[in-house]
Length: 86
Length: 200
Image (cartoon, rainbow over all chains, first blue to last red; front, side, top):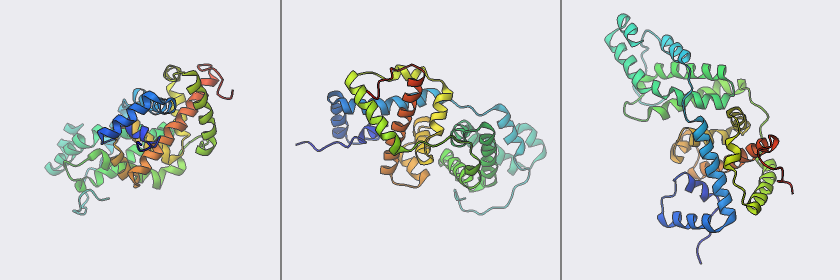
C-alpha cells in the first residue's frame, strides 16, 4: 500500500520544493487521477501564476530613488566590525 | 548622481556609495512591492523604503560583500515595519481562515462537480481587486505569499525571514493561497465573471 500524500504537499510541488523524484511522481499521478488533488493543484498554481503575472514587475518611482540617493549621509559614521548584524 | 557625490566626498565614501548603488539599489522594486502590499498605502510604503535604505546605508559597512544583499535588505525592512510602521498601516478588515474554510469547501465541491476552470475568470479581475484581496490576508499569511509568489523567495529563505520552520512556511502558504482564491472567487462572483452557484 502506497503512503498517503498530504494535500499540503501540492503546495510544495507547485513551488518546486519536492526533492524526491518518487514523491514528485506520486503527486503528479494524484493530480491526474483525483478530482480533489486536481482542484487543489489548480488553486495553488492558479493563485501563484496570477500574482507572478500581475505583480512581479517593479514599481518604485523615479522620485523615490532620487530622494533616497539625495538623502544618503555625507559623512561616514564609525560602526562595529561585525558583518551582516544589525 | 554618483558623479555629483564624487565631487564633494572622500575616496572611501565614494567607493561606499558606488558599492551601495551596485549592491543595494537594484533591489528597490522588490522591497517597494513588499512594502506596498504590507502597508496598503503608497505614501507609507515610500517612507518605509526610504527609512530602510537610510538604515541600510548606515550599516552598510557591516554587510559582507558577496552575501545575499536582497535578504539583508528585507530583514532591515521587516524590522522597520514591525517597529515603526505596522500600527500606521491602512488595512481593510482581515479575513479569518476558519470563516473562509467553509466557503472554500463549498466552492471546491461545486467546482469539482462541474470541472469548471478558474483561471479565465480571475484573469478579468483588476490589479486593485487583487491588491485589496492580498491586504485583507492576516499578516503572517500575507508575508509568505508575497515573498514566495511575487518575490520568488525559496521556502528556506522565507523561513529565515519569518523565523519559523519550513513546514510552517508551507502550511501558511497553502492556507494563504486558499484564502486568496476564496476572496477572488467572491469578487469574480460579485462582478458576474463566475456563476453564483457555490451555495447550491
